[in-house]
Length: 322
Length: 173
Image (cartoon, each protein chain N blue to C red):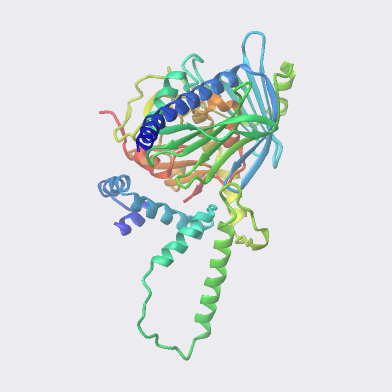
């Protein structure tokens, strides 16, 4: 009888302790993954899967002697596409459409935003624990599970390489635990002696004359943009607000970003144009949901890796400050 | 409330009514499931996107929940040819949709039965066309969005695979 009582007591005390320990370990793994992705040089092949769509890409990350982080991604399936990131400048080359999409962020200091302090606040919205270890692309990995505490966000599973802390596989899951989207390395070499040429764009030379879609920020990343989201989605707080230039002949666009520490919702506000008329309502781009709504003479587009009803709520609350 | 849900999906509600439905959606898990199902059915019928095996299971369980009618059935002796043709067409398209749905977004580890696949002929070309013609602004939005996505700090440029991927995008639901 006494033995039973002791066992019960041990289970009652030991349960939460083990759980807290599992959460702390899981958070520290995520933290390591952030650092590793910025500091390690690597090259490999990874598979991106969204619904029935599967694409293989080659990827290389190179950190030069000055600490500049340069990455190149080349899609190997279907039409050739390339993404090159140099610190905070991203260029996507889409030869089939003859388009270059450019994105230049301001200060590098503010982001990436998955910093240790925001990692700690993740536990408000996700139950975080260690999962089973496993092999990915020939490497032993630890896994981390993030189970959402409400229906406003999806769940995640991350597989993190045991030695270096590099993220090798990431899966986003719906409320039934089914994969919505997955990134996974199929082959990888970590710590390679890469050179600048390994991450240099192959398509830049042929992109002359292509249409350039650029929306460079014209303000700081945290300015008053004259708009608010009055019915925020639980857990999502605004992490950025800026104006972006769409070209000399068009007024600036407003871009606000909301995040719960892991998932993000972007809200874009542009003056309404006639051609926007037929594209109001919910849409989808792979695992990213999109919702467009007309507010007065503006088109408000919310998008993010969250369930459709979260976007609906976000977009319904967007209004101009009076 | 279910009628309002359909109206909301079709964007036919006044702002105030829409807000009421949204509030109910947040509070009511069953209603959220209903919402997801209605959107899914709409997608499927339009051939816009693929859905998971869970969708089929959900529809089947919904059918199981339907009350069984024990009233005597009046046997029709004459069936007009037109009606027969319609039910046959409905049956065929139903089979096509369900088996095609089962392909997409499968839970990991579920074997894909290639033999059972029938893709509605009109699906793929339409979806692809809308990607090629309309989604440059959406891709630009995605690229801007991913610059601020916290997961990007772990995934780096890999996250941009989303923005440039050739998924059936920009389809109006």
